[in-house]
Image (cartoon, rainbow, N blue to C red; front, top):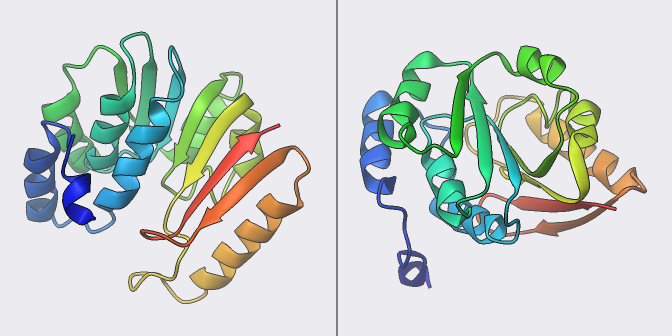
Length: 192
């Protein structure tokens, strides 16, 4: 099955992956998650996309690969060295706006914006400022998170944070969600 995922890999993926490994960045989304992000991106033609936590741009490349030519993606990260890798390989894509910013600052300064697709791959928008980010989601919009299954790099106490995060999402009546025990653990939410 993994060989099937290799079909349709973005052209920039392997270059970004090599630089990611060389940079020491260890929090990149896995290829199964990235493939799902691409597939879900195709469901939002002319969509407004948001990625919270660019990292080096591995997942960004896949989201862009699934987007149509009328869609736009804003992706931010607070680490300039990692963001520079994404800029090097993806910066020429006119649909993409890469931003160097602290997560809290970006969310608070852009609260009025609305999105059709949000991939929350950092603390802000997942464990911090969750309500604010969910408010940015359009009705029918997708909110996607990964790393919901225990990870070897989780700090002490993080599993409880993840459990509480899931319970909170499940308690909201304006969301429909599915938890997927696949890849690193995925949750897909649609705003009612």
